[in-house]
Image 1 (cartoon, helix red, strand yellow):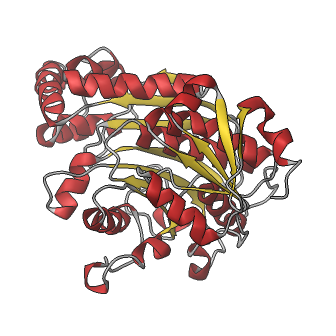
Image 2: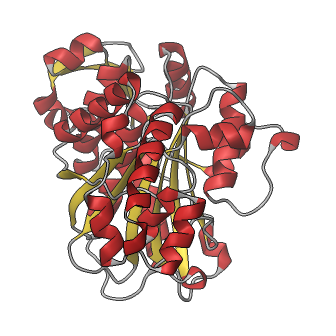
Image 3: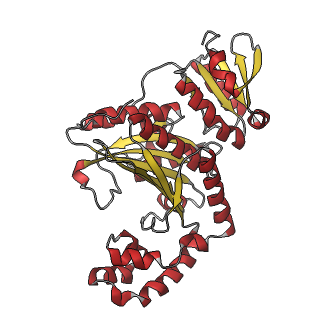
Length: 382
């Protein structure tokens, strides 16, 4: 889809919903239907309400994460440079996935939304603050450092410093940016576990071919993210303003009151002028899937993103559950949807670069090289 020449928030919401659905995300309203009414979160969906709703679903189904999307005319965390009354948000959530798979699926979907809309992503900037202990060590070091430079700050920034040293990262002034650039780096204070998780995320980003850059100044979100990312665009889009997100495990635990919890979230902010509230209930196109893609294991889910790209390029409708861990759950879902064929990738197929294609009618199957999949799908009735 080419970038529109004029402001088109309604088209963007519809486009983002279609792409998100293809990568396994479901509308928030659909997710809610699986939660008892008494446990549903009231109000317009935004980061907080969606995280709570998804977390409620995960608590009832502890084995599987939840992938959901929503749109809202009243974002809960609008960047300071935007006018809230003029800004809408399309949000993506992966709740209940502590592994790096959460970031990878979300970033892959986010890139697809932006590039297919017609926006060119020049790079993704990333930073890691790590778990609670990692952030505590960094904040102690940062506090001592910036206090030594307090005399170089204006009065407003000194007032911020007294309340929260991290608040300085929200200042766009040249003096503050320079002081922070020369100061301690959050990545140097990561615990072993946080460092390992961040390393995995970067390895996956490289494998997907996304240009990225480490950005020490990408800090300052009051939701205390473990990992932060932001997509930089080439030029200006008539509708889309920006895309950003991160991993917010502690924030979800605070919302739900649970000791365990994990969530990766992203927001695409856009100009909403002229869009009525009814347009903020996105639903993907009602297109029946022809094949169901089954993935078994983390490696298969990561390599499977290439399969999804192939199917999308070949215009083959597909359904999958990146959030399902068991084979039984995926087979039940495929049966309920009445697909004609199953695409199956396990650990061995992921290593070999192959995929199993199985007929739903007679269980006959064949093993293909991934490169041959699009051509093969054209020869069968799907």
